[in-house]
Length: 133
Image: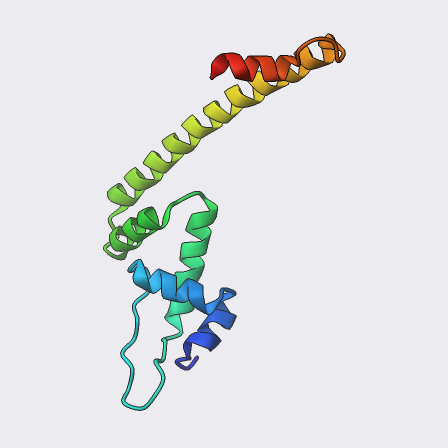
């Protein structure tokens, strides 16, 4: 059985820095244990799994506010609500991908125009950006 640990040991075990844990505490994602009189706060071993959950959720694009919602609804096994949060994130990512794809196509077209211009006259990239302003 793992023992409780100080914030420094927790940070090392979770692969984050101490300030990350403090930030998660300020955001309400990780509970701050009470400080015993004359001692250091001790975190239960389960906090490592919670931090890992937060980091994995962030890797999928969830904001910390969304992670907080997931944690709140997940604790009660509210599958419908956690699925709804995930569906909203998925839709947001789809929109972002579409926007990035349009940007990529537009930039590629500008690069092609610049290549065709062969360094003569006004740069098509600068011209296009100036027109859009």
